[in-house]
Length: 397
Length: 107
Image (cartoon, rainbow over all chains, first blue to last red; front, top):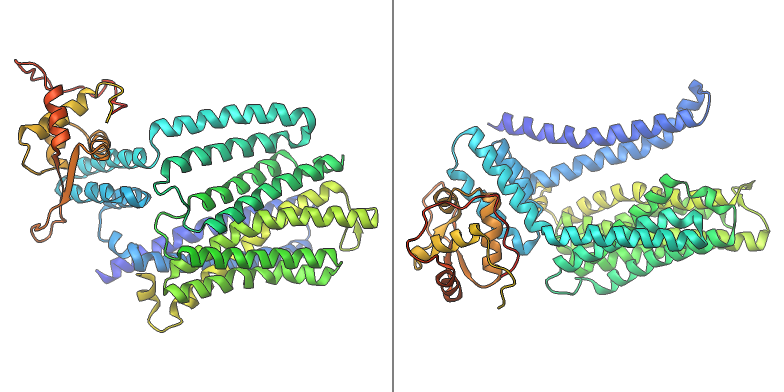
């Protein structure tokens, strides 16, 4: 039995590691191909910046599976496939609805036969989805999103065509998030109002900064390609979604939110100061090593205070959703100010374009989170272990 | 409490089944089998009834060993009143409600 459980756990570890390897391999292949004729030296030179975060994420995926296994995974391993399927569907339900999911899961014990159990699990999962996203509200979210997207595309396209795709995508997603959040909110009040307000302001700031940058610099829209526009809209709307409707089971509460958001403000401010002061070395240091402290520190503190790995991960999520929009907004402001002072666009001493600055701000936004989150997982693990006890026990809390 | 639309046939069937033995606690799988409803149809109905104060819920307190406690249901006073209001006039039709009939949107 122990061997079987161990094999199942290995399968989960492999399942978590596979997407990490696939994504980083695909990105590496794309960058090598984009770099032109490839040589072994070039491929090796490009391999290093991909191997480091890939290894960090592989370790992170292992940590996440380890803690999940200690909390829920071992119990799931004793179920058959339809039972596991329904358990996963039930786990997505928000707290006020979870008892209904537990009820369905409990009833399944009486259902006999593989096909009958699958039918019961699939039908119950459909019920869980309808509890999670009531059909009427989902339809309203889609309809409202479509109307607002069309209006935003028309309105913004008339004055700032290069920003129209972003505006339409972001407006649609933001409206959908708002409609669904209103449907979910029972208390009507987010668990950490100041952190939520900060993220909302940062997202608004990023949108305004991007619009102003594109309006003021006619060549800038070439840096906001359709793929980047959609990526930026999805990321900013995702930040908004996580800020206004946080995790269904919060382990970290306000502490994790304020620690994470506070560290993000410090990191973004540090990057802004380094950029404004022309401290290229400091800016590079903060880009490469700042995320380790800004993500790992709050995660460690929250996990240690709450004695919970999940609390540390929550702090890391708050760092990510605060630093991404804030970094994007401040990065564009710093670039615009540098242009006003220098009279030209530069990066690491080389002449660039306004479009390059836009692409750079979006890249920094993504890189900060990709490099930072693994440190949140590591900080959370260290924090949960800080006061003694095994990894297994801490993860089970 | 206001009702914007008449409940669906499935909802009326659930109310009727629960009203047949108003003091007895029932459980989901039992109702599924009795009414030939799938859980994907039954549970959203139970949730809406509970949300509107028509259904009382409780967890089984003393389940037999090896079986998780059941989530139990019975009608509240308002639920019994609604079931009586919606009960078809005698003779009562024996037909089981069809899944394709319109869903109940209001309470």
